[in-house]
Image (cartoon, rainbow, N blue to C red; front, side, top):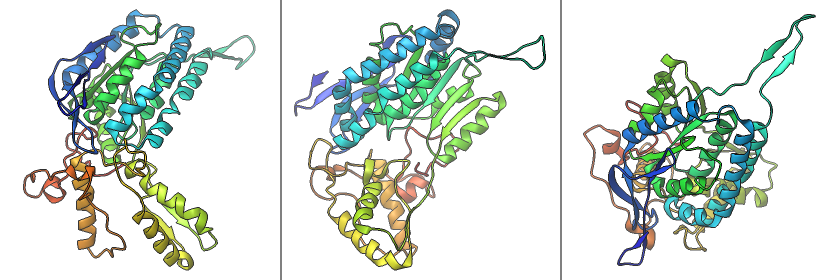
Length: 403
């Protein structure tokens, strides 16, 4: 790490493939989404990194004892849990800086990591085989065997826990793995790789990690016949696209996709208790969360009280950098999303939506440094709303949906 003239620490991220730090590729800037200061650089080498990562994972599956030694897998998973616990504060700093989460929300994400790894360590010790007696003198065996290389395609909104949530059971089952994360969290991903490298019994190539600004690496993971299992967290449209792409290989997909399940307030609700929960549901992780309360249904008897009470609470939410302990909510992840969200609101107003409290891009203070992107081609989504998708999208998919 180096220090820039303005005193900001500049980091140089790396992809982690076959146990080695890899920095091939064109270097691009990592930013603090609160201030748009450059906090580091990352190598953008998506397609080639994906190819090398899959090759390393295939080799590790064939040539190491990982798929066959459940005690090794349990031991390594426990070592990973210990490594994340040791490095918790270090990971907290880069996650909140690069992802924009306020410290309490970043800590909430990290506190779920070790328990998931240790749970999977325990499942690795469950012997894969069960005997039954369908008729006298014969037995039937059910064998649990790893399928091979598992791809974990995780998003930027909760990159650590959503990676570990899929990675841990894949490792426990005996799969080798390739993790793909978006470029918006390249520095966080690089620190995660350093932490995972501390597991002393982890064979090279069992875990590989890369990040990219585009879709090429993800597309390769889905299209490759060497990757039979894919875990994807992201939008519903992208989920449909990759399911279609992987269908010709009958790939196994595990997906968490977008949803809009509403919060519901009935006439007998205690609003003193409900309103703080509703406010936090709307603002947690800056609203960039699969469980964000983006729809609210209120019974008629409580409608006006909920509307007025929620507006008052939202007016008092302090939006600021994660580094400021007084911030209630951090920034959106990047300029493209600032513009996209503002464009969606403007479109709703133009269509007749009644405004009770208008937020929008911050005009004063450290969060005001966002700038509009140049317009896209006529008629394009970017031209309409300024949205330029990054990370979680797919060729031919309209990924304007937020998960």
